[in-house]
Amino acid sequence: MNFPYRLLLLCSLVGTVGLTSTPLNSNSAHAAPSCPTPALSRFQRHKVNRGETLESIAQRYNLTPSTLINMNPAVRNGSVTVGSELQIPPFNGFVVEVPRGQTWRDVAKKYEVRADTLFEINGCQQNLSVAFIPTGNVSPRSPITASPAPADSQPISISGYPFQKKASVLLAYGWQIHPTNGEVFFHSGVDLLAAVGSPVQAIAPGTIVFANDQGTYGQLVIINHGSGLQSRYAHLGEIKVSVGQKVNEGDLLGTVGTTGEPTGGQPHLHFEMRSSSDLGWVAEDPKSYLQP
Image 1 (cartoon, rainbow, N blue to C red):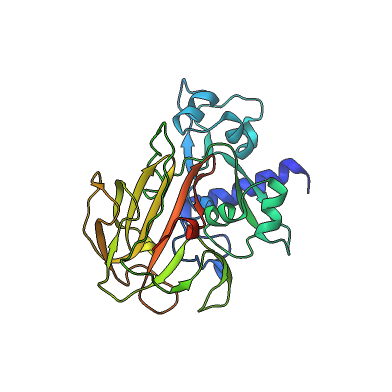
Image 2 (cartoon, rainbow, N blue to C red; image 1 turned 45 degrees about the horizontal axis):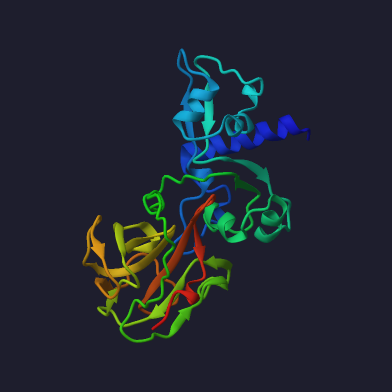
């Protein structure tokens, strides 16, 4: 299969996914808790209007012209035709076929992308035959990742704990085996065992940027701490804060619950630390931030 035809086929697949919001591989579409909608399910179509150029369309969607060219072989010469339709990805990147037998680590190494980030961007799905590879500055439109990190002049040090006492770890950060279906997945945070109704507190000062239900996260609170750091508190039963509210270390955020799709079968808090980078808000190991 020559390259132009392969690219055309991939764009056709993406177009189908974008219209139906159906994962490419429904047999392996189980997404681990806290994973976003796969990038391939978030494509849009843009009909070219009179007066528009490739550059103006790219600017409208916060993309580079090269991204649009990669996804639309018909505009390889840099010009667009009025009335034609373009595939618009959610952020800069390109689509590739994944050779049979290759893992996310293999694909990530080939394209020099963090394996865990690549895994999450593709919805934490297993054994995909087609994957989206992000490049440059990723600007996801999901409400849990859209808030920009404040530009602080001084770096901050975060060291705190979401409970008054140290809790046992139900599921650690990193690559794990799903306790229910046995699949390997990337766990973007740490699950801390706690009884339903236990108070959950902020680990450090910051601003509430999200406080609502968010899919598999359930009831979720997100705090931006500045210097590109963010903490997330998921599967809450109740939320006690609101967006825009300033909080200090130890302030009550909500209570432990069982909302969303918690793994492990026991009530717990799913806690994440994320840092702002050129690949969006990427998960960090919470261990160094959690100090009871």
